[in-house]
Every structure is written in C-alpha cells, then in structure tokens.
Image (cartoon, rainbow, N blue to C red; front, side, top):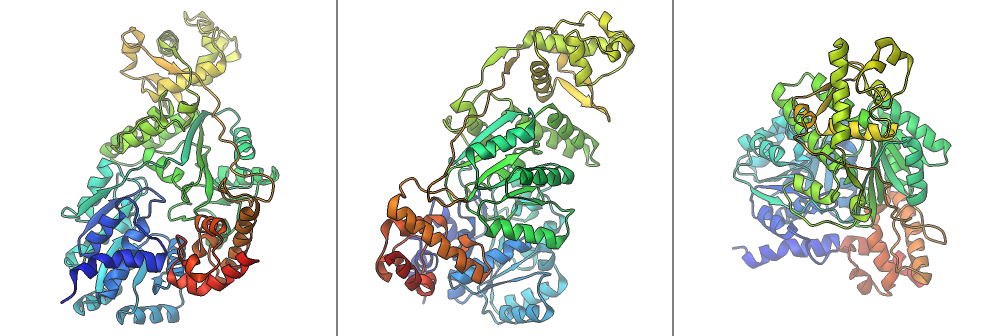
Amino acid sequence: MPDPSAASTLPLSILNEVFGYTAFRGQQADIVEHVTAGGDALVLMPTGGGKSLCYQVPAIARHRQGRGVTVVVSPLIALMHDQVGALEEVGVHACFLNSTLTQEDTQRIEREMMAGRLVMLYAAPERITNIRFQAQLASLHERGLLSLFAIDEAHCVSQWGHDFREDYLQLSLLHERFPDVPRLALTATADDSTRADMIERLQLQDARVFISSFDRPNIRYALVEKDEPRKQLIHFIREEHEGHAGIVYCQSRKKVEDTASWLTEQGINALPYHAGLDASVRQRHQDRFLREDGLVMVATIAFGMGIDKPDVRFVAHLDLPKNIESYYQETGRAGRDGGEADAWLTYGLADVVNQRRMIDESPATDEFKRVQRGKLDALLAMAESHDCRRVRLLAYFGEASQPCGNCDNCLRPPATWDGTEAARKLLSCIYRFWQHGQQRFGAGHLIDVLRGKVTDKVQQYGHQSLSTFGVGADLSENQWRAVLRQLVALGHVVAEGEYNTLALTDTARAVLKGEVQLTLRESVEAPKRGRVSKGGSKPAGGAVPADLVGEALQRFTDLRTWRAGVAREHNLPAYIVFNDATLADMARVAPQTLGELGEISGVGAKKLQAYGDQILDLLRA
C-alpha cells in the first residue's frame, strides 16, 4: 500500500527539488493537496500569485504516482510555448499541440502522450474538443493514464466575463465524458456573476472554490483627466519609467499604430500590436517584448492574456477599459515580479460617452446590456471617487480592505467641492435646449452657452436668449467638462446618437429640484513614484533592489548579461532561465559552492546541474 504520509510530502518535495522553492505561498499548499488527491477546484488568484504551480505540482505528483498525463487547456500559442519551455528547463517533460507544429512533430508528441510519458500537454480548447483528440483522451482514460484537466484563463467560458470565447463553452464535455478525472479551473479575474457562470458552464458545482486576495500592493493606481494625452503619456514614461518595459493600451488599431510611431519618434523603443497586423508580425513583436529589456508595447486588448513577462514596470491606458475586470486584468500584467509598478490611466468625457454608446449599439440582449452598463458604472465610480482606489477595486471583487496609502487619491487626496448648483445649471441648460426648439446639442455648444460665448451656432439657434446663457461664466471650459463628465458617470446625463448629443435621464429631475447634493472632485496631478532605476551601472528594463550596490550590483549586472546569452541560445525569454529575484539573491549571497547555490530560492535540481558551474565561475570572477 502507498504510504499516505509520503503522498502528503510529495508536493512540497517537488516544489523544492524541481522549482527550487522551500515553501508554498498563500493558498497554494491547500489547492495542491486537494487537486493531487483527485479533487475538483476553482481557483481565483491574482496575476503573479502563482496559479501555474497550482496545477504543475499536482501534475508532476500524479505522474510520479503512475496516473499519466495532465492536459492543460490554454488559449494562446505564445503562452503554451513559454510554459513548455519553462517546464523543460526544470526537467519536466511537457509539450504542446497547436497549428505551429509540422505533421511529423504532431505525430511524435501524440505518441509520447499515448504512451503516458508526457507529464503535461498544453492544447487550445478547439483541439481539446476535436473528435480525434477526444478519442485519444478516451484511450488514455481506459488505460488509467489521464491524470488531470487544468483549464487556464477559465473566465473565457463566461458570457459575463471580459474575454468570452465560444470555444470554451464546449469544455463541459470533459466532465460529461471523464467524470472521474479531476478538473482545475483557474483565472485571475472574476466577479460574482462571472464566477457563478464559470461554475455552471464547467459543471464545477461540487468543486472547492479557492479565492485568494485580489490585492496587488506593489502596483500604484493613478487615474488622471485627459489633457493632451500623448504629452501626458510621454511625461509619465520619461519621469518615472524611462528604459523600462511597459504596455500602453489603446482602443483602436489606428490609435495603436499612431501612438507607437509617435513614441518611437520621441526616442522610446515602442512596437504596435493588434489583431489587424499579420500573424507573423504580431508574433515577432510579442517575442521581442518578451525577450528584450525596456521595450514598450502599444496594443489593443488583443495583446496581454498569458503574458508572463515579470518585469513590466508600467501599464498605461490611453482609453477607458470596458469594466473593472478588464482594468484589473490589464493592469495586473505589471509588476509580476513583486517589484514596484504603476497602473496609469488617462480618461475624459469622450471615453465615458464612447463606452456607453458601444454597449447601447451592440447586438446583445437587453439583459446583457444591463449587466455591462452596471459594470461600466462601477469602473466610472472608481474613476471619479475621492477615496482610496484600491479599496474600491477590491470591494468590487467582494474583498474588504483599508486605504492603501499608495494610490493617487491616498497620496494626494483630491479637492472636492459642492457641485450641486453647477450641476443644476448644466442640467437646466440641456432642458432649455429641448424646451426652446426640441433639439439636442453636444458638449462643446452646451459649454459655450453656459459660459456666455457668442458663436455662430449660438446665434443661429438663438440660444443667447436662453435664461441659462452665461450663468456659468465663473467656471472655465475644463471645469465644465469635468462637471459634465461626472454627471454622465453618475447617470444623470446621457450622450446619444452619432453626434453624442446630450439628454437628461430620469434621475436628473431630483438634481434639478435640489433634492440631491453632489460632491464633485477637482482634478489633481498624479503623484510621482520616482524612477525605479536610473543612471550608474544599474541595468535598464527591470527594478533593481535598492540594497544592491558596489560589488553586489556588479554581480547582478554580470548575471543578467550571462542570462541573456543563455536565453538567446535556448530561444526563451530571459526570466524563464532565472527571474530577477533569484539573480538578486545570487548577487547578495555570492555562493561559492554548488551546495550554497542550491539553497537560493528558484534554483531547482535541473537548473543547478545545468548552470551551476557557469554561475559559480562568474561569481568567483
């Protein structure tokens, strides 16, 4: 009979021997124990929290117990490639099946899988549900060699999620056809409705649910009003992240290309990425981003899922995301290594109007539109809030917290003012337009009338005769735009039609009557974090621990140079060889023997054997 105590210690020994870590983090130990024992689980864990280990360690443990192959459902080819490369680096036999392989390579991998020699096989949902592949799984199952299903990016199965993919809907057949094979679904982002949808669609009603804290304390959140956004962006990069890797998100493909070109002209090493580019160009740009230091990727949301690059120091949004899940998922790609990182967003009235219009004009059902409006409202409430951004963000996912002291609102609390009277003037002016000629107008004309500006359009429609003409001369154009933006965000005003003309909603009546008091925020500059690294011999592209100075800093620089060469030789991103945290520990400790090197966190047995002598020679030099 197998020894139960040996089974319980197996995952920890794998963590140490294979991955070079001495202890699990957070809920990892409970998840790994549960799944290794054959239990189903739904895991919600933030980006950088160690989701991959939650299925990789059980996969290795169950393979050593003779249970065969773990099948990992993964939506992206690039992610499969890097995950498999990382596993092979630590001595775990893994492969992927996707369209990049030749028929000969596909057949070879299938033979490895059918023989039970593979520990893990990565495949896209389309292949998983393919009739031929299902027959292969059935054959493995009959022989007791189908160990575990791990469904990564599981939020893709939910229509309420931010990245719904129809291919994921067919994954319920895994439970229907192989009910005794454990399933582990993982995601970094899901609110209550998305979680419920995932459980129903993947038939995980009896699974244990593990929800880790959504907090990423190393990320500083800052949201600023749009005022020449390109200049704001270049100022942000140059002041705080010059030479660092980052992602800039834009809504349209044209804006992506224009912004990337403009950043390049300004001396920033930037590349575009969107679904309209040729597949080979997208792949080349993504490979460069993963493998080079200090590159800025300007992208639509087509870029990002599965990007494991740990030293992304900032994520900037030039357009408002669709909802908080999208915002959290996208900003979570910064600071995966635990180092300081920034989530910076600039937004304006047009962003609010465009997002609402996209929801209203979509062919979706009324129920879907209602839910999406609610999600957008939650994001707008966070954007216009006076209090801690992190508290608002975590509360959306059902997590209570205290003010963080590290977001823009905490570091420089925005001034607020009683905007009730200003709001009544603005709403009254919109009402007077309709009363005067049953017509609607956009923001520019509205503000001209409020400020008493006589334009051709004002004269054309006779709006200089309105009682609201000039009642807002005490506020600047930017101040009125801020008032209007906040009224749209609060749902008292809506912009409609091709020309974004303004109309009142039902809730505007209470404001007009003075039954509602409105406290509005004044705009403030986002506080600076300061550059993470600059000057001297510090390497660009990643955060350098402050305690690395003198010879330790030189060792760190030399180790990074060595790692870059190994990564090029193996055609892998540098962080897969060793991450910066492991190199920093090597630089601090300066081990002189293989035994001492093996004690460094992140140095497993295979990597010690493969690289130990080279590293020791470098450190001794």
